[in-house]
Length: 322
Image 1 (cartoon, rainbow, N blue to C red):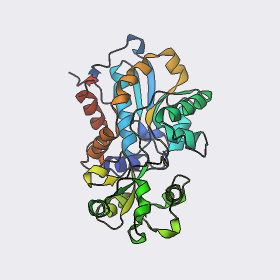
Image 2: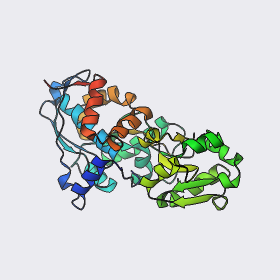
Image 3: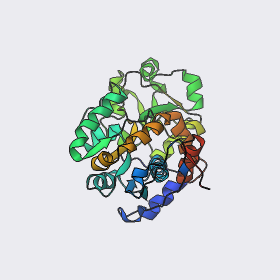
């Protein structure tokens, strides 16, 4: 997904393990669980399913969540969560090495299917478009979760109190000296980055003060007031941990990045119960839930696989094994 790199300790350790080794070392086992509201399916008994995900925090949580769910439902799961790079995960899904991966609708539409313009009408419209087109590649996108891990701008506590704005359209009302931004270099060059965003909201890049930092530095710099506005991802756990306030994208500039499971079409045709399984889980995955789960990894240093299973247990989807 857009080259994002998680900053959590576990994610960094995972990166260290898999760096330079492609797909090979990402086999990370599965935390098992007993069926809860997600029942055991006799038809899945002994069916081999390989789950893959990318290497940053949120993907590690999602990948392990899928692996535990499928195991509880009866499948024989190989867990390849933590595979380095979007292109490796996508390639493995296309060639059948992976059969289920968590993915974002915006990534599918723009990065994998090559469209220049996102569909911002609604999450459903973006999902249907990418699902319809990707079926030509033998892949099915299940109905997505409400969580939307897209770009956003956030303010630190002092800027929030001083400026008193809540929407990106209100940037126009601020004096030039308050238009200070902390962004990474990629956000400066993207078609869905800072410059076109400013134009979308009636501002010019030449009229603002933009400082480039590493993505991991931006959250802290924004929180401590080095800039009034910092580039963030909307489900990042550091938003709440650092008391950042996200501005509403009220004119719908940023693409929609709702997460769902992308499933091998042949597997889904043989086992349509997979759609039934994730239809129970996905509606519960909101931005607030993801910020909480990501923070447990990035802020508290917990293991993403345990974070995923604990949440499934709390929601009653699965039970701890006897």
